[in-house]
Amino acid sequence: MVEVLRVSAQTSPKSAAGAVKQTVKAIAIRGYLTSVGIDLVSMPASVDISLDGEDRTAIKFIAAPR
Image (cartoon, rainbow, N blue to C red; front, side, top):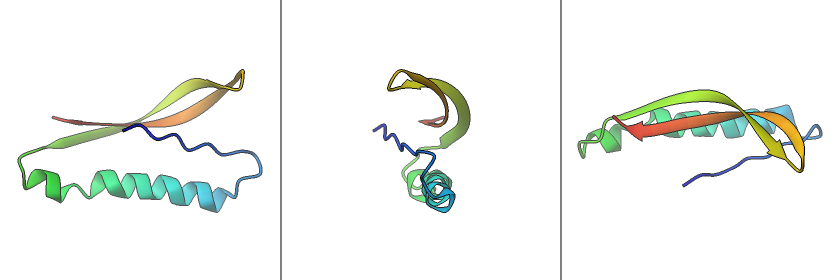
């Protein structure tokens, strides 16, 4: 499932950082996957996207079984 979190210049940096923190925690806490034989590997990446006709830079979290 792919979720997109959009923030604007008016978004509180604390709120945006909290959402990123939750994403990283979800990826890091993967013990339940290991218990069923899935070894998860993840990597953050910087990507260029277009939103409403404007170019933006985004963080993409890539997670997949090894």
